[in-house]
Length: 146
Image (cartoon, rainbow, N blue to C red):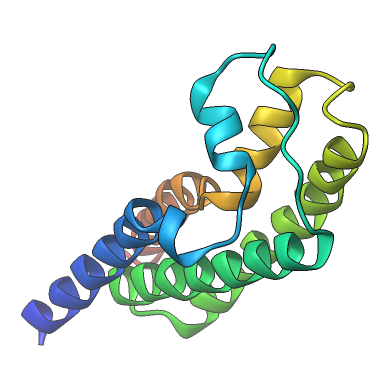
């Protein structure tokens, strides 16, 4: 059974990697090239709001699914999986409107600020905080029991 858990964690990791590798083919995001060039003098890309929002929401749902898969099979705790999902959703609900504002403002608020807001929207960075948090929590709970 332990082998199956690790296999599913690896599937979740490969799922997140696949979202990143195939981002230009799966999602509508005209800002991929804009931020990839890292050149502030490049012209602001034209885009469609509806398609952009739906593309980011679809990407978020995929990232959330694979992140929850990793959390669940690493810690085998349904409550922690739900808590991890809630934390990821909260961060997305905070950063996504800020990123949309940055787009509406044509990144006048700041190129780097917009760049990092985008990172929180399109990548599951919060997972890098959740895993150590739950790992620490698991070990402190074990020490309390013993």
